[in-house]
Structure formats: C-alpha cells, structure tokens
Image 1: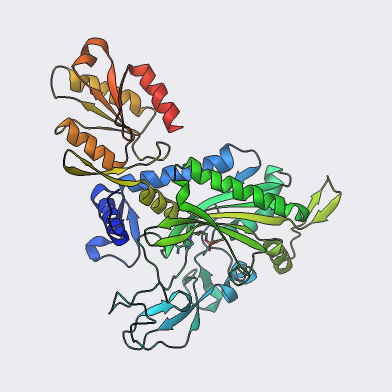
Image 2: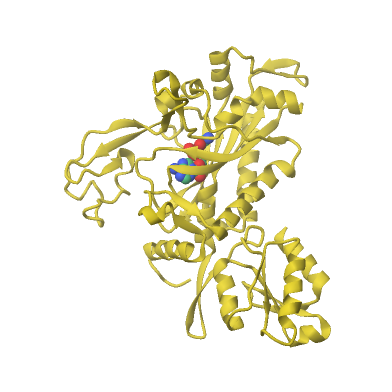
Length: 444
Ligand code: GAP
C-alpha cells in the first residue's frame, strides 16, 4: 500500500465509501447528523454478508446455539437489574473555553476543536471537574410522557437473551452447555463518537451468550476465545493486525469476572473489535432476585440445581465492517495509474462476480447476459458492458468484487470464458458448469 499517513487512509476510505455506495452520511441533504451513517447498496450487502457469516457459524453450523430476535424496548426494570441505570456511565468534562465535551478518561486521545493538533490537556483550555453521564437513551412509551412511561433504547442486545433464558431453554429443550445468539441494534449516547463508523450512537451488535456449569466456566471461556479468534481468521483478516487485550481489575465491567478484547490495529491505533467476557452468574442471579423467577438449571449429570455462568462473545457489526474496509483497502500503481483494490474475502464481498462482454457485438452481449442470468440464480453478480474492459475491471476491484467473467471471441467458438482473480490478476478459461463450481467453492 502507498506510504500515506493514517488520516489520509481513513479519509480515502470514507470518500471511497461515499463514491461507491458503501456508506453515506445520514440525512445528508439536511446537512447530515453527527456520527450517524447510512449503508448504501454495496455497504448493506457487505454488512448482511458479515452478519450471515456470523449467524451461520454461531447457529446453523452448530446444534448447541439457538438464535433469537428480541425487541429493542424492554421493561425498564431490566436496566435497573442489569446495573445499567446506576453503572452505565462515562465520566464527562466540558471545556470552559470552547464549550466542547470530552470523555474524562480519554482526554489524551481527544482533539481540541479549536487547536486540532493538541489534546484538551495541552490546548490551554480550562476543563470542568468530571461528572458522570449515563449513556442510555431514554424515551416514553405511549402518549403520556411521565416517570411511569420511561423506557430505554437497549444499550446492548445481551439483556434480551438473559430475560429469554427460560423461554429458550424450555422451548428448545437445550441442555447446558448451550448458547443463545442474537444480532440487533443497540444505542449509546456516546460522549465522543467518531472515527467514521467506529464509535456511533446507533450501532449493531452480534452477541452470543453461552450458559455453562459454574465449575466449567474457565474451560468454556478459553474455548470461546479460540473460536472467536478463528472466526476473524476465516473472515480473511490479516491476523498480524489482531491482538488480545486482557482487562485489568480497574477495566472490568461491573458484571465481568474476566474479560479479553480482540483488538485490531486501525489507522487511528489499536482498538477493541470484540469482547469475550466471563459474566459469572451475575445476570441470571440478578434477574432471578428481581423477578422471583427461578433461573436455576437442573443438571442431570450432576443431579444438582445451579444458576448457570455465562460466557459472552460480543462483537460490533459496524466495527467488523470498518475492520474489513480498512484491512481490505489496498492501492497499487498499474501502468502509471494509481488503482484501489478492496480485497474482501469472497465470502463477504458484496458482489461475488462481474460479467462482461469484451465488446458490444458479435453475439458477446447476448452470451454474457445468459451467463449473468445463470450465475445470478446462485450469487450476487453484476453485468457491465460500458467502457474499456480495463476500466470495468478497475471499477470492480474498487468495489471488492473477487472475480470477473469475460466473454470474448473465443467464447463464441468454444464456450470458454476467462475468469479473472482480483488478487492474483490471473485469468483462467472455464466453461459454464465449472464456473459455478469454482465460485461456489470460493464463496463458501
Ligand atoms: N454485552 C456486552 C457489551 O455490550 P461492549 O464491550 O460494551 O460489551 C461490545 O460492546 C461490542 O460492541 C464492542 O466490542 C464493539 O464492537 C461494539 N460497540 C460498542 N459500543 C459501540 C459504539 N458506540 N459504536 C459501534 N460499536 C460499538
């Protein structure tokens, strides 16, 4: 990749996302809304593929994990019990000089809006004493906005799983150890959102809670750390850019007995991508105390009743998508021209293959359209006949399309087509049934 500085790379990614339809600023025609983003045609496809890959590996390929889709609004008591009402705070300070607001625990990495080369600690502004700010968004359910109608937009999807533990256990007849997985929106009124889609106020989580015997928590914690590491490898990331970060006693969340983050080296530094937490029996015990519902599990193996411990894997969908964008972004100079390649794994690439007739004559477009229709029954494909074929390849490289199928003069004679690999740029001639097998193997 070119030797750009890190801000340049983020700027280039943000601008490519807008230009190619991955991600747009939210409500842009109204001037946008701070730290809110909309996924465009390529971005929504990429996001869906990431979620499907997670869902598939967590639920479809295993028989010990069930999926659910809980509502965003929950009984407000849930958030009192979970500790979010009292504990889910960030310390906040204001600058008396420029009126900007910062997280008191992240002052070194924050930038002064008036002197962007300096942090609020060194810019000369006067800061207030830190005060606690609760990150949950509050609203009212129903027409009367009083204290009795307060509800929260969920700040994590996990609680929807805990309150459904008994329902899922009883309806699915799963035996411990087993898990419940969920993908969905979460909301946090972050004091300092930013770095594109890295920290937003509305985001999506992919969370799985695994219920285990209390004596087996350490073993399952290790197991899930390994599984999650392996998932990122299969996602196609450069594993040299990933590392583990263990939470020290001061960092541990109020619910956690042990926690490790998987961190990625973003252009703006090493940052959390996913958390793997041993939540002990904290959640089910608290919900049991608050509701008087018996959350204990009777284990026939040990002939005993216990409150299960929970091993949680908690990933951000948007953060994974940003990682895939940053990790896949590549520039190369080809024949004196700077070209951009998004090197997504075929598994998650928004478009799996493009189909081109070399020229718009001699029966090539007709042949190509049939190929496009045939491949389109199985994969997300794109047809393009406009401009020089080199330009068309370049457009697809930038969209992250791993393969381009070109129909040329020889195709009309012997039905073979060239299949070009985005990363090796190799072209192999194949006929139709083989192309389907080839793409199926690569995409799965
Ligand atoms: N249930 C546990 C939990 O929510 P977390 O570490 O607060 O743990 C888990 O969040 C993941 O959710 C993070 O690793 C990150 O990927 C994602 N995430 C959290 N806050 C986010 C935000 N403001 N914007 C985007 N993603 C966020």
